[in-house]
Amino acid sequence: MLEATGASDPGCVRSNNEDYFLVTPSIGLYLVADGMGGAQAGEHASKLAAETVLEIVHQNSGSVTAEMLVSAFEEANRRILEAAGANPEMEGMGTTLVAAVDTTEGLLIANVGDSRAYLYDNGILQAITDDQTWVNEVGRRLGLSEDALKTHPMRHVLTMAVGVSQALRVNTYLLQPAPGMQVLLCSDGLHGVAPESALAETLASNATLEDKCKRLIELARNNGGPDNVTAVLLRAA
Image (tube, rainbow, N blue to C red; front, side, top):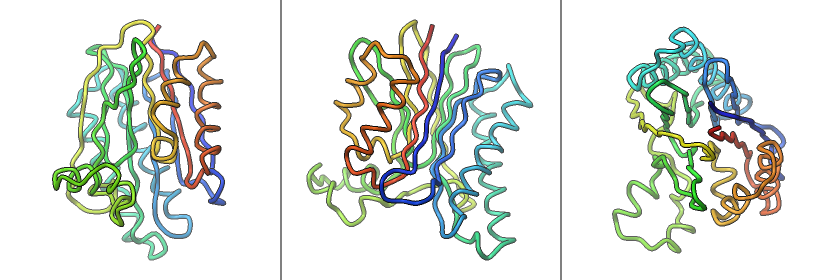
């Protein structure tokens, strides 16, 4: 059984919020999407992706598999491409996507882009997902130092996003949550801004999940809040 909550904030720089999140315990779906694109396109992409995954998980509630979740991401990709093709103002829109589904096999997680899932257990915070970014997939393999990567002109470039091309590479993971374990889903407006040590310190506190989410948002804002920031926090009972 999972306890869950979520929160989102535009941050300190942007006037609109292109992030979108879902906390739907009735079907065991938890999700964060970080949209991109001009005008309102980013907001449209993240919402469309989230609603597509929600629809498909709901249709298969209780029997969701990794293959099914990948198919839901692929359908979201198709629908965003279709919507962008039908409206010139939506051209170029896309979104990152990280989702967790509570299944009989465990907590199934899938991601595209750089919105992340973290596991916090026994005082240790570790990333579950792999970022689909130039930094992670190219820069590190080239042997560039972490300091160099932090200022590299390609540091914000995604290698994969939902709705950008027909080809979509979805990563999947399976967790076996034990009582007390926490899982954090978040956009890069949080993990790319607040240090992981501060994330871990927040999750280690005895505060409620709602207060922890508020504190996570505050961490990003206190570090300048240059981007929209979203956090969904789960705890195994």
